[in-house]
Length: 113
Image (cartoon, rainbow, N blue to C red; front, side, top):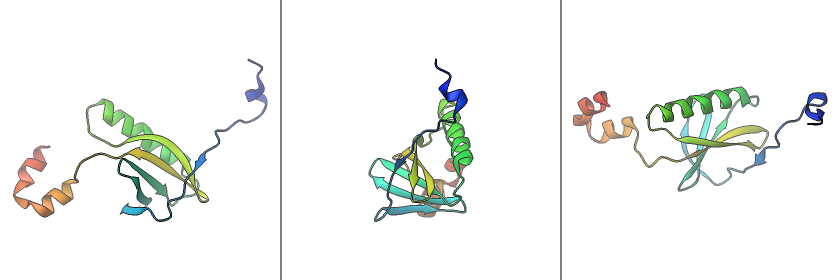
């Protein structure tokens, strides 16, 4: 109402999280995924300027969920050391690669999925 935010840039202060001692459950070119607790994971991005990437991934995950595709639900963006991370609700699911490695006879079923 005052127009204050039009005169000065106002940005969200990000909650800070440490991943020290957390289990790494995945790594890739863009970052690493840590288990915070049995229900929460955090993807920590290698790129220190990852906020546009985080927004894009969050938007895509929400669209996928609305379309009925099971996906982890992002619900927070946090500061991790001098970078950023995206916090997700962990799915109780197995990856296709794990299913195929353990039961290669299910390849036709996985292709249909």
